[in-house]
Each structure stands twice: as C-alpha cells, then as structure tokens.
Amino acid sequence: MLVEATLDFPEEEIDFLEAADARGKLATLRHELSQIQSDARQGALLREGLSVVLAGQPNVGKSSLLNALAGAELAIVTPIAGTTRDKIAQTIQIEGIPLHIVDTAGLRETEDEVERAGIARTWQAIKQADIVLHLLDARIGFTPEDAAIAANLPAGVPMIQLHNKIDLLAESAAVALATEAKAVRTVRLSAKSGAGIVDLRAQLLEIAGWQVGTESVYSARERHLIALRAANRHLLNAAEQAAQNAQALDLFAEELRLAQLQLNTITGEFTPDDLLGEIFSRFCIGK
Picture: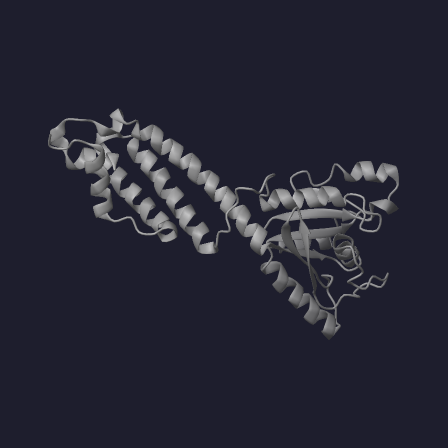
C-alpha cells in the first residue's frame, strides 16, 4: 500500500515510504514470514513425519537397530548375513514427530535371485528416503564396500553414518574410531546395548528441523509450504529493489504484489479495490 501510494500519487510530494518506514516494515515482514515458514514446516513434520531408511552391508545391525528404535522385536536378527530379504517398516515417534523407519536388505554382490530382488527394493527405498542411516560395523571400519554404497547414495538426502557394535570394541579402537569421517555426521552406537541411541535420536530431530515448543506450529499442507517459500523469495527480491530507492519502485511494487498473490492462496484473495481502499483510508489523498 505504501509503495503503490508513492507511485500513484506523485503530485502529493510525500515520500510515503520514508514517512512510514516502509523498508523497516519490510524487514519485519520477512522475519515474521521466516518464522511462519519454520512453524509451518514443523507442523507438516508433526502430521506426516519423515522416511528414515537403514542401509548398509549385510550383518551390520540394521535389523537390531530397527528393533532398538521401535522397542519391539520386529525384524529377525541372526548372525547369518542376508537374513533380511525385503524391507520392513515401522513408525516411531520422537518428540511427537513420526519417523517411518525402514529396514532393508543388506547391500552386496550376490547370485541369489531373491536377495538381489530385495537389494533392488533397498535402492528404491533409499531414493525415496528423507534421511538415510548408513550402518557400518565399528570393528571393521569404513571399507571399500562401504565407500561404494556411500558414493551411490542420492545427493542432497541427509545421511548419518552409524558405527554400530561399539560394545564389541576395545577401548583403544573406540578412541581411534572417533577421529574418522569428520566431514560426515557420525554416531557411534550399539543397537544391542542401546549406547548412542539418544545421540542418534537427537541428530534425527536436528535434521528434521525440530524445535522445542510446539504451541505455535501450523498444520500446513504442502501447497501452503510452497506458497510460503515463494512469498519469501518475492520479499527478498523486493528488499533488493527497495535498496535502489526510487529507481526501482515499479519493480519493488511488483515483487510485493507477487508475494501477496502467494499469500492469497492461503488466506483468501486481496483485490486491487482492497488496496485502493487501504490507501484512501490511511491518507488524505487530494486534500
């Protein structure tokens, strides 16, 4: 409204933008919208949850970890590699956020047709994951086979490298392990004893963007999140145009209008007549 008033009524010789601190208001709007985005995303997480896929070589403890996280014996655990032939899913909650944990067949080269079908399903689940937990055997460390798995994980999907079975490590080996893979999120744990599970849960919440206090979260749908992101981009562009003062007022107004259109898809339509009504109700135009 302030920008349009300055553009449409230049004869008034009033800089409505400066008089009403329009740029300061824009900064406040951007901050508030960012907070709404954060709350809305958390609301979507509370409703829909995240898909967390357990991946790794056979017999590294994926099924044991699923059982530990679920608090129940859902998957068969044996010393025999390749026990899991198909994915097993279980939904758990951490701080109210649903996490759909998917145990998968171990990734390795095999001639077993059934196991190969399970491995193909594993890679399909990994492609659809929101988070991948890459399990390793802490007694062996990061092997060339693990490197091959890591190289084939989809780019852009958050990954935590889990060094499992630390209960079977000597103390000196555990200290050496802590220095590995500094550039990668790493958790040392024992799915059998439960050591490190609290750290894993904390990292899952951090990746999910969970924040303490859920009183203000919104039950946003995906279309709301898309509209909020688009509105935020337009307000960023508007701030860049505002920095150029009068030289870019038309572009400033257009970016604000586009941001308003995005918000209209959530709250309802705000028409040009509504805009003029705001202008004439707040300013003595023509008097």
